[in-house]
Amino acid sequence: MSRIFAVAPALMLLAAAGCVYPPAKISRSKPSAQAQALRPKPRIEAPAEPSLPASMPGEVLEVKARLTDLKGGLRVIANQDCYLYVYLVGVDSRTRLLVPNPQLPQVKLAFGRPWEYRIEEARHGTLRVIASTEPLPRRLEDPAFGGYRGVVKRLRLARLLWAEDAVSLAAAPNAS
Image (cartoon, rainbow, N blue to C red; front, side, top):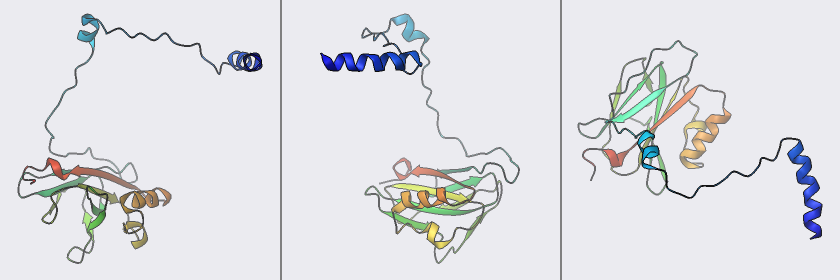
């Protein structure tokens, strides 16, 4: 009993300061048919071709990635000139840097031009694309320390303009 009386004045002070709100009434009944009819229905649409509005340099960088229908490829488009980094995050959260690689040492994507990359070695996991207005130093792009989450943490600390997008390989038309 003494605890209740000790807490009550503190709650009254908080309520007077506007910090405590009155308890809301909880309704456990089902919504009426009329209320359900007024509720908006979710619309499911097929993925459209990636397109971005034109923007001026220095504004927000946007990147859109999607799987192409032919031969398991990745198509990326951006609203500014940028450098691309493609990571494969497996179902076990292991991360590999796919691009840049020895065959593609640096990918510079031009504004409005799609870039395509054929994915041959992976059929499961998630492709994650990072676009940056400047080339990333090796210490930022390397997934060896912390995987993809570690890369994103380091990018957030760096003072760079960057964006990311992800595509699941399970959605690929020829995934097996």
